[in-house]
Image (cartoon, helix red, strand yellow):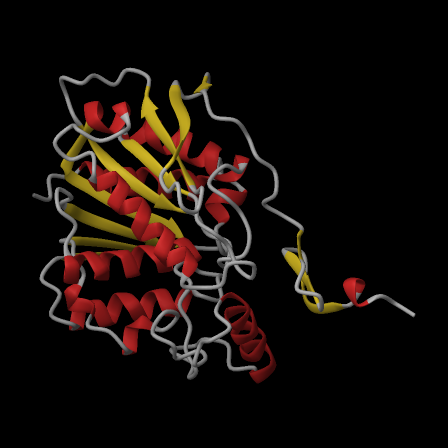
Length: 318
């Protein structure tokens, strides 16, 4: 008789499988690369613990030619993976952020957070906020990490993330809008293929009830106590005041073949209608699918997207 330890409760291959004993088998995003100097981009990185309580770390990136006499904008990045897979230390994100930091000439903090199902939501949101508080502790040059003390212009802070990371970006920006974060001036956010959903389809979003049920099932795996697809964590558009975003500029990126495309457009349209007083931009990649820029970072669309986001961060939005 087959042991319950090998019985599959949810098969989300090629990404992961969850077994009836609660164990998760991650099929992608498990590889880890060490930080250091990247010879291709001349970007240097290192890992630093931001929470002694949870043991979570961030990976920091600086351009090799950085100088303390000229402070640089700061990008805080939140990785994707449905809240269940990937880390800030995988080659996918490490390589992407090396390239981005070199292109945009910024300092970057890439946040690692606890993942579901071992650590169900709101653990990822709590960790992300803890990381931001740790970042903010460096305002004034008295924090525990020299790179942030020396090289960051805290008047020019940006958040970005893809998929679940873009979801986190939205919620962190809302939290800053409501509670503030002393020392941090959040100028703009970039939501890349944001992981939002809802009970009712929007636009030409897929209507197949089986597919929608599967997507809700993945959300319930990450958030077992959720009320469902209209939970404000996954469907913030109809449940929160978008006008309270604590920034002045928003860039939403979608991909034409991505199932989540319509949610990105819906967010963009509702934000413009919300009374949000800042600038809202949209970039759509034709012929591309979800997180294509991470899967094929040298393709024409990925290079164009990287340059667009870098330009978004280089504009004077003060």
